[in-house]
Image (cartoon, rainbow, N blue to C red; front, side, top):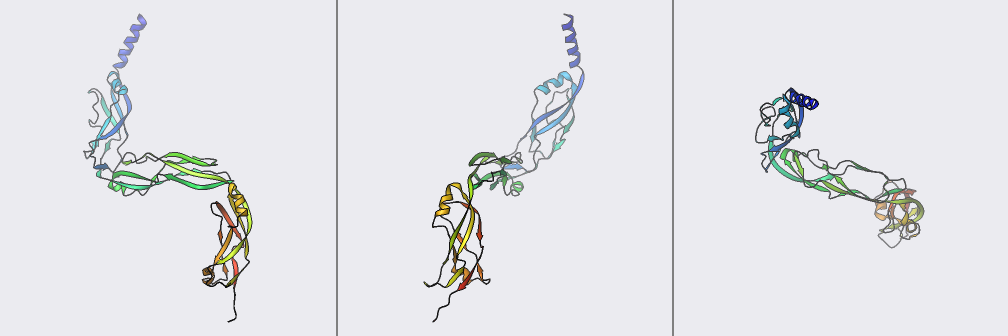
Length: 293
């Protein structure tokens, strides 16, 4: 009985003592017309330093009010009655102390999405479909001066390691300006595809094409070149055996040349993916063929 009475007396004494607390209160913007937007972000929270008897502050602590930021005002003073605290609770300080709403006409625009992604491949692999996003644009809306300064909208940064095949993952769009710029979607989809590649090497013929006559007008030296390349493992046999793997030199390249050497153009078999192509030699000499009249 004595213990309970002592506890009640201690509680009554403690609740009646003056105290000071610091509270973070959530804030929201009110009275902003649909055709207007803020140019400067309003605070998401306001930190208040409150003093008073503990029994008066306790309800505020456990049932925290929302700070209503009136966008129709030219100045919002957070220490001057913005929040209706109990009459015996004093506001000692607020941080930030003031906010100055700056309203502008609301406009919208469609801007490309900037993918911020790092995809690591094993040394044996390469992309057959380079990383891209779908959709690749987003509609943004906000104050005219803000929207006119934005030429793209970034994604959050994402890193994917050891990519061996297809990748399809949703990537959130950045919300850095979320309080003053609204976006039509919150994410986009990253799509990429990798495959295993192997190295191949092959000698191929070089053909002169586009001659103005049926008779040979020039000879190439040499008329065969060695091609080193990387190719998908599944395409290796086709690359090594197909007759559609050859090189050409357009006659117009010889006609317009002033150096005595031309660069062959490699034709790869249809449907195979090839990368890291090296030609030996990289350029060819040519000799015009003269005919007796």
